[in-house]
Image 1 (cartoon, one colour):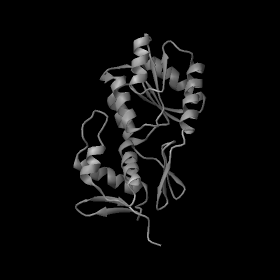
Image 2 (cartoon, helix red, strand yellow):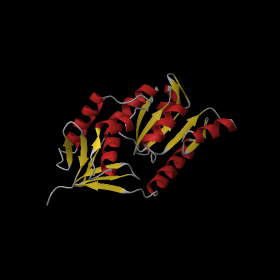
Image 3 (tube, helix red, strand yellow):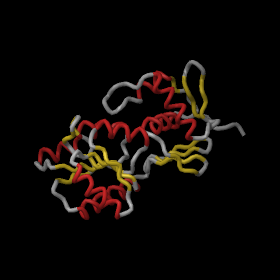
Image 4 (cartoon, helix red, strand yellow):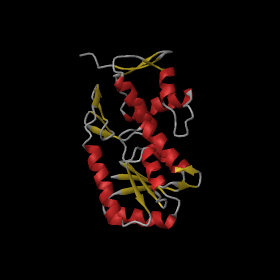
Length: 223
């Protein structure tokens, strides 16, 4: 398991990270929202642990943006804010669970396990084309049976194309859908670079077609 952990207190972060390492889980610690966004661009985690107050913004806004782009990703807020209103606001922004500090590490681990079990049982569809499979419930991608690790934008780009398999999706449509965590629109150059990286990670699949000067299309290979 890979956990993305947003926490600005280094001592707390180290304690949680070491504890999860004992359980065999890998933790990517990010003390700021900016670092978390960079980590997400590299790889989607299995679960997000999210503090409320961070040096460069509020975790609730980050949670809301992340939830809108990745509906199945388990998110647990871990924060000192324990008022009823705060807890309700945490759930309202998209968190799946809420744990107030101070906390028992074993209890936290059990709740994380429960979230992962539930996310695996949601039974989202598996989108497929040309040997590429995207399991929405697990947010896992394989290419001819081989696991492929995608960044956030790469995953969302592939998901959009697979959902529209057989239809051409214009660059304008993709740009309108693929906004980043700050709500800023992805520019045309970013889309080009993201598509190039996606193709490389998938081994230059023939099923991912370029419609010159227009857009892209996922299409099953001709027999």
